[in-house]
Each structure stands twice: as structure tokens, then as C-alpha cells.
Image (cartoon, rainbow, N blue to C red):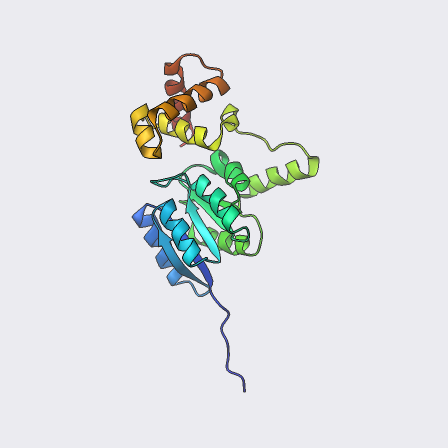
Amino acid sequence: MKPDTQPAKIRVAVVDDHTMMREGVRLFLQHHPEMTCAWTAVTAAEATRKAEEDTPDVLMVDISLPDRSGLELIKDLRLLYPKLPMLAISMHDEKLYAQRVLKAGARGYLMKNAPQKTLEQALHRVVAGGIAVSDEMSEEILKAFSSGTPMKTHDSISDLSDREFEIFLLIGQGRNTAHIAEALKISTKTVDVHKMNIRSKLGMTDPGELAYFAIRWSEGNR
């Protein structure tokens, strides 16, 4: 009589600099009958190193990391590991980031306040090769695919590049040029160039107008 064999658990890696979130997901995975936590990382650099040493079955990536944007990490890992399914997680509303993370190479987007059941379903879906987004976003994707027209954009903010959008959000948090440069590990001159490009895309000429608009926009999308 052959001994019973248990199916291998889905190995999930978690990249998040928020301790409570990271440890909460790790504990959830460790107690899940079908999943386990392969490893956790706090920064993009640590995640890249660990992925090379031990590639998981699926990777959860926070959009906001202390050393680099989670979007940039997703793009890098997509090139290095094309078959690695990734699920982006964030505090920001799905409509702000879902399209960006899918373009970057992730297979889903989940807000951090989602219930554990939704997280479980999202992980299963991306591992199986599907896309894990809300029903509303799924409908937009299907409409765009069937009609051949671009997906609906939230507003002119969608014209910003990923880096520009990241800087725009930091401006909306009241950060000045020096703080933004420090947070993103880039020069103040580079930040100023990005700000100029942002104002150009948004049709603004007054630097003060950008700060006012970014703060008001961020408050309206919390």
C-alpha cells in the first residue's frame, strides 16, 4: 500500500517594510494548510538577493519600499524570472495603481485592508496563471481587450511615468525636494527635473500650483 503523499505547499515570499503587515502575512501563510512563507524581505535589494538564492512560487510586493519603488522591483524581477507570478500590495486604492502594476509585470493588485480570504484567493489565482484584481477592474480590462481601445484612465495623472507618479504622491504628502531626493535615493536636481516634467504633463506653470494640486488630489484619493 502506497503511503499518502501531501501536495507541495505554495511557497510565498513577502516584500514589505511594514513590520506588522509583513509578520501578519507570514503568520497567516505559516498556518495555512496549502501555503507557507518562503522568506520575507524589507527592501528591494534584499528581495532581489533572496529571489536569486531561493525563487518562490509567488511573490507579494509592497508598492512603497524604503530603497526603491515596488514597481521598479517588479519590472526587474519580471526580466530575471519571467515565470514568477507577482502580486502587488498597497495602501492606495486600486484605481491608482492597478494598471501600472499589470504593465510592470505583476499579475494582480491587492489593497492591504483586504480580508484574508481575498488574499488567499488572489494568491491561488496568480499562481494558476490568472489575474487578481477587483470585479470592477476585471470588467474594464475585458472591455478594453474586446474593443481594442485603451483602458479607462483615472485622470490626467495616468499620463505620469511610474517615477513621476511616485514623486507626485510624495509631493502630496507635503515632502519637499530634499526629502523626496533622500527617500528615493536620487539627487535634488533629478527631483527638480521630474517636477518640471510633471507640471508640463499636467499643464501647470506655477511650481506652487503643483504642490497644492498634489495635496488636494492625495486627500481626495485616500
